[in-house]
Image (cartoon, rainbow, N blue to C red; front, top):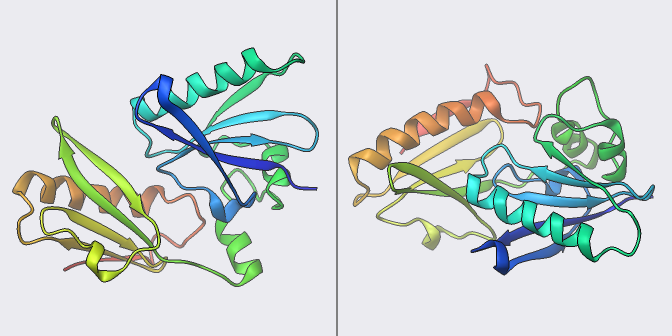
Length: 195
């Protein structure tokens, strides 16, 4: 059977909350932290590659709270993206292939890929990236750079009021995103188009 997967978010460690999502490899998002409860009783805290220190601290606090509140001796194992053991993938209904993510293979198996949109803005000399869910054209913000991932193509949209610092960081991010995408795509065949 499959496990239970929860996305963890919040604004502060004391204000962390989790939302159950479909327990599948396709649900994983590099901008989010998750807790996975496997059918065997193992619990994993998964830290997405693009999460920042605050997000990881919030997720770690939620995991510690879970350990403290559990009646039994539950141990939460922290995993960084791309360090997942086979048990992790099995609980998501996918089989590992080598040491890489299986997301792309899983998506091909179910014949489904959904485009993903990310908004980028500068906060204190760093680029903050957030995924936009259920997006429409109106979600393109004039003061931001936006990344649209269509698997074989990545589009970088730069709003007319987007400042030069965000533009430079977003271009660098787009290049890193393609190279570090954990979904098995052919990195040499994935193109980035700036709009």
